[in-house]
Length: 324
Image (cartoon, rainbow, N blue to C red; front, side):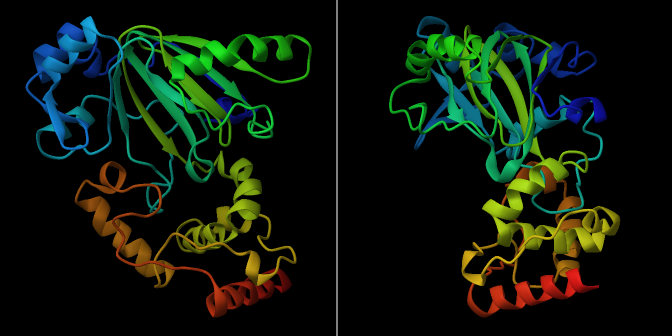
């Protein structure tokens, strides 16, 4: 993992899917149709289609994009076709909310994801099983709104057509840092926390992606969490103090003189950290912690909103911690 975060830069790794069952089941449109063509997916609100039909239609009309995050019923088998890539062995699994739902993508040419950065400063990995994807990545401090890069109301292919050449020119002149690559089958793209990225399917492609926080990436993410989402950060450190006390103590203070009114709502429940961790343990024992819970502690029954009196109490606790 240290290789991944050594310079906080995006990276491309090859051969990651070697040994995955997905390589023999997702490795081409025909293999995917053979093994999972009978599975039904929601492609629009209230509209479902068999995967075999989706692949056949996408082969004729490329502008179709399937994104699956709910692996219930027969679709749960997809999650057993791959393993966590090397470098992500420790993903704070015992801390609820530090791993996002997996995202499974199947999309034709000209489809993809518009420029965005991942929720709550997660880093991310994405492995392509077949096809080819174009990635463009910008550092966290890039003023994407000032540059007119987001929001963008047209398709992702139009976004690349409008912005790729100017971004390359700005990078060549040293005015902007831009990273881009073509990702092919078996390759993993690593996206550091906070990096903006857009992805375009060059051809019919299939990929699996995860967002997560790891002990190695948390220090980089923390600088942003404590200023942009201080309530979230307070909740997260309270959980870390129970499960990873050394890691919690290594993190800088959150408030640094911030007023209670600057605290935004937290994302975890209105009970103590030990209760949350017990709930997460029970949830994980059912096999759903990494697969069924979203990043904002969905699936945990408690909720904590840091505002008013609760925010002042959190600030007082933080002040006491700094005095010790």
